[in-house]
Amino acid sequence: MGKTINIQPVTRIEGHAKVTIQLDDAGNVVDTKVHILALRGFEKFCEGRPIEEMPRITTQICGICPWAHHLASSKAGDACLGVTPPPAAVKIRRLMNNISYVGDKILHFYFLAAPDFVIGPDADYSVRNVMGIVQAAPDIAKQVVRMRQMAANMLEHFAGRAIHPTLSLPGGVSKPMTEAERQEMLPQAQELLEFAKFSIKFAKENVFPKYLDAIKTIGVIKVGYLGTVTEDGSHEIYDGKLRLMKPDGSYEDFAADQYLDYIGEWVEPWSNLKFPYARKWGKPKLSLEDPVAIYRTNCLARINVADRMATPLAQAELEEFRAAFGRPAHYTLLYHYARLIELLQSAEQAVELLHDPEITNRDVRAPITLKAGRGVGCVEAPRGTLIHDYECDVNGLITKVNLIVGTTHNNAAINLSVNQAAREFIKDGKYDQGILNKVEMAIRAYDPCLSCATHRLDGGVAVEVTILDAQNEVIEQLRN
Image (cartoon, rainbow, N blue to C red; front, top):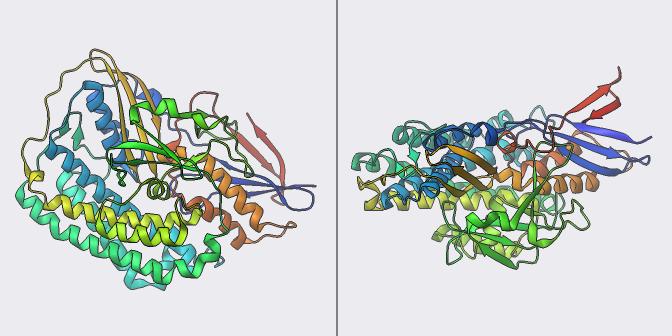
């Protein structure tokens, strides 16, 4: 009889996931699914809230990337009320976004991804973790902790909170930056930039060359990409146009408030995570052989869709990356490489913004007048394109909310990558913990934030009950 392999929980990700791998009678993979059964429901309980509260409420969606939700929500509020924030406010928002990016990228590469590469994908799980990293490279680990703390302190000292911030709101930000604050933050930003330079150099010399075989075999799929670019096609994470690129590299650009014309969503009974797809590419198909209308977001997608990076050091790295892997690059584990290119650019941009004298201008909020309207706020969260779509009434009370979170965009691609990895490594019923970890690595590359992404309420709530016997074998699985 066939067999079901359960990987539960998936480790070193944000949120909770379970992978089920179905084997046939010969012990080969028939199908693989990633089950996300958590549910947040923010879209519903935000209804009736004042629009000015939304940037504070939606930071609670995620404790890992609250700044992305904070700024996307603020931008949706700007659009609903028809207000344009002053230039200094936009620069402050951009600065906070870049600093939060730096901390986030450091967290994922060193704490969540690095155990697979520094300790090794086949190492025992008891040492293949962050404590194993501390023991294997204590000096680097100390630097990592210090840099993470520095980024968090920069956010907290200026904005009041590093997590669940309250700084940004419709029309701008709540406080200007003083010259003393600028002078205090500038050397810290410089230090983060030096660490970003070290990180990508370290990875290129000590990590990626050793694992080219893994890069070329784990989770490999060929799908499209979605990301934000400026009018001239440069990489952008705060504001710009969306670019949807097909697997062959051709693309179409559109404004964020037109996303419903380009992006659809479907649901499956085994997950509370929706499945976005590219509407114009055909009926979506979750198939390894022919993945119609599937696309990816997050750092690899962003550097694929961008014509160039926005800063000189990051641009030099992009040129080297493209010389090695082409455009678009399809290897899933290259997300780790792309993440470090973005780390470098975010650190460069933080330094640039702190050198800009306009950032200390005291005009940081435009006056607002409550009115009925619809607004779409879009930023690039660390995990992908983040869309907040609000409608409000004449009193500024929210009547409708739609959220598409970065990880939600990647849901179909994650399932395809995990399916490919399982089929690649599990043969004739033979597998071990190292092989199952390679399946998990296909998920980790996307750095998913699964609690952040679960907003599905339509089509019912997915529930699964697994019944095991005394030998821990699956007797029956019940699903709604």
